[in-house]
Picture (cartoon, rainbow, N blue to C red):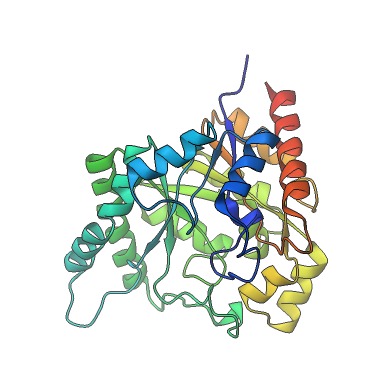
Length: 308
């Protein structure tokens, strides 16, 4: 019996939105052509993709590719002075219209929700350790309520699930943060994007154990491997997230130390059906795009076949 998952990729293997110096000169079409040639079924979005639904569909159709999903920068963790929680949700609902409509037009079922309020992930001179944290239970609960309301809106309006991306440098980074978020949010309104690389860097010595705890909430998976010696150095020397990327904290599945056979087995046994997305921020001048994208695809496709 086949396992109903699809293998996609993020264009970060070719070009980096946060650090345009990494592959910034590479045309989008190069990534799409090479990704299709390797065997990927679809792409997540990046800054070089068309911004409207029909334009995006036309571009992907040129290469016979699907739209996997797209990152959405949310700002629900912090309520502005004089603003109520309801006001913050209403502002987010207004802000998301163009992005969600574009995804809906392209048949996307999950959105990558990245919390950007207070985040230090894009600040090259700020250590990851300076990330924001909620200082009280009340702030955690308020955040969960806003996420529930926003997630409910996305489902009702666009038929899209909010896949929450735990991320280095943001409010939800560590395994304890993920546990807390999952405990406080509604399982029918807020879902989890599980990122193996961020799980490890965020403190999960074995990402598979964290995955097991929350696999029933997982609706999207980012397959990012890690170079453990580089992450150890990043922690010890107080690197920023982006300096970690430049120096090779992350790589593609099969090139690092994460046990993907075990991770995929957990997903398979839990009945996960969705995308497995190779997403490995690194410098294409050091890690050639085609070679590494191919290695990631071959690693995942081989494991998927063995679990079918």
